[in-house]
Image 1 (tube, rainbow, N blue to C red):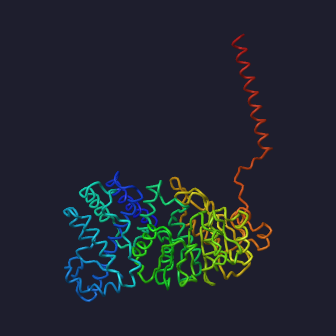
Image 2 (image 1 turned 180 degrees about the horizontal axis):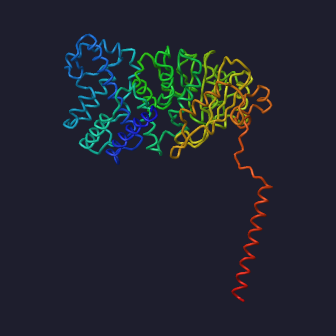
Image 3 (image 1 turned 135 degrees about the horizontal axis):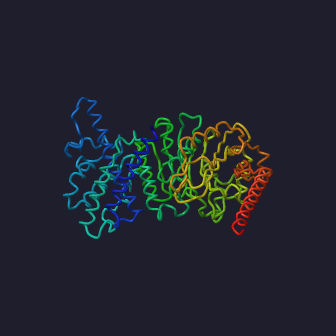
Length: 520
């Protein structure tokens, strides 16, 4: 039943987004359209979130008819300071999403109205602890862009359709949805606009099912953790999975992430708010993680989950200081300049708590290539940091058909072995892509927790075995693939051929008799 409800909610959301896209078709490029839809969803969310927060407080105090949306701006101003302290931001009743929607069609200056409101929301957090979390949040929502229309009237016409479309989305209570509405909207928008879908620089959106598997691998046996960290956090889907799996109270000190792309960085902060993560419980930074890490004062982290960009270029040994960086120095060598994958691995390992687990999606090449990458793998194995390598099915990620892997790392392993799991068949086909089902995820987790050999599926390799294989960590080196070719019994086949030949001879004899009779 839960799966049916989930699919219904998902389909409803997709229809709503498609309807808005239909209305805006031809004017807004897909990638910009994504920012407009998500920005409007965010505006609606924080308006409803603040209203619900205030209304609930008044209703508990016995004022059952109270509705913040119907209050005058003058009366509401009195509560500004207190609300900024509690929620991190403030919105006047007249500037709430629902009230702006009511008047949108008749507002000839709708673009200016929205620009003013977005500025007011960001300004409301200035001088407070939440200032950095709100600064520039609406930068990608350009209400005066020619992309929306050549004239103010045309732009406003599109903005009305945008507001109406998001108003009609059946989002209900964001927390009670069985789908992650915002994450799902983001994923759907990416698939709608394939040509620009964040593929530059090796970036790929992490599907929710893969996020679920990664985060559950990193939280096995834990009911609560100190902090969760993602060094390449994108829109924050992996960080938020930890909140979903452990519960908000299960992550005691909050969510930390770093993202180099400013648009995605803004989306991540928006996503935190959309999931009701308070401003003092997350710290997202915008910088290059490998050369300018922003969370030295916050590490170590008990859970690290990430899907870093695959095989991107980085400065590497062109920067002579990096070999002495405490994150990279222990391996004695830096990841190649053309392939930063193992630099992300070393960074994550360095910031991992002694009782923690890191679960990271990897490009397959890092498991077997020679040179500097082999030396880094040797360091990881010699020091017993690699707990498990899981080979995933191909075609799981939108934008690439590559069969990726997951590397699970721990600093406090109980043995000196590494588990290899072949999960390439753990998926179902959905249109052109493969997808992990709940059953697939449970099966992989069960194999991971059992930590035992299973023919064609899993092998627990000793340190010596890996060393003998020159530190090759490809799953296919340790787990024999099942031969699914049909076994042919040659004796039986020869017997069948003999019978066919004999039948053919009988038929020929019969035909010859008929011909003789006709000619006779």
